Amino acid sequence: MRRALSPFPNARPPGRPTAVGVAALVAVLLLAALALPRPALAQMDSREGIQLQNQILELRRDMQNLRDQMAQGGGGGGSSLGGYRQPAPAAPSGSSSSNDVVASLVDRVARLEDQVRALQGRIDEADNARKNMHDDLQKQIDDMNYKLGGGVAAPGAAPAAPPAAPVLRAPEGKPPRTPEMAMQEGNAALARRDYATAQAAAKEVLAAPRSPRAADAQFLLAQALAGKKDYAGAAVAYDDTYNRAKTGTHAQDALLGVAHSLTAIGEKRAACVTLDKLHTEFPNPRPDLKEPILAARRQAGCR
View 1 (spheres, rainbow, N blue to C red):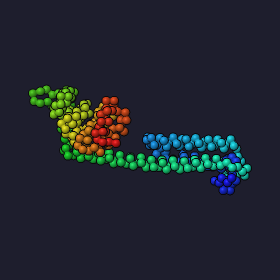
View 2 (view 1 turned 90 degrees about the vertical axis):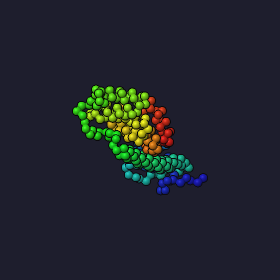
View 3 (view 1 turned 60 degrees about the horizontal axis):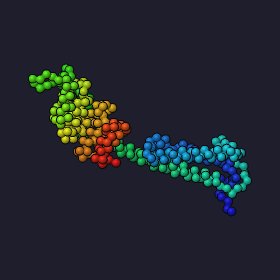
View 4 (view 1 turned 135 degrees about the vertical axis):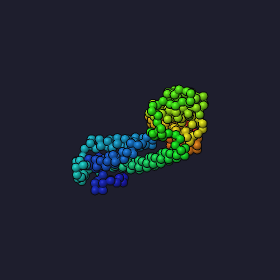
């Protein structure tokens, strides 16, 4: 019978793995596993990433089992971390199972490292693509806002001629109405599809300084513009609604409105970026929005 080749050329084939030999290889394997990039593992939320993490955990268990076998078998080589000594000769044996296990573990570590690097590269590419698409989306919205001539009030912009108090001007012969009254009438007009009246009511509220209903009025304006099929203006108005209160009552509806408006004007790629942002900002959307969000993704052809 041919003798199996040992990974240690100066030592005779052992009956059991020596403490130094196996401990040294275990230390190398453990360091290789620990050297896997933690930021990459932290970002892995895909099935492939989870599978890799499970394989690494299994590999660590195998290495621990090998350590336990070495400890039970004993050996006179001392610690693998304290300085290497040539192991004492052992009785020859035809078994090379321990060496085969070590070689298998080394090969698995190398393959897992390659897979983790490849997956990290794909994650980086996806992050860069998402950032570029988000920048493109913001540029398109800014361009539309510019083309509209600033007709939609930007968030935080100072009003041109603020009145002394948040009391809205009414047509001649009628008493002034409060923002609450204007919003009530505007929402009623929106419900009966009188979009021009709803738009006028929203602008009245937005014209008043420090109005407590400004965010609601901005959302009403966006809905009215969408109802009038002014989708470019609606996209800007919905975006302003989101920027006024990014965690407010209308934030999820506003991002969905931006996506619908962009799809309507043929900007499906930008619409998908907006829907991805909606998923990132609100991973658990309101129950009444789950189906509309899925429908919007299908309409825009998002992957």
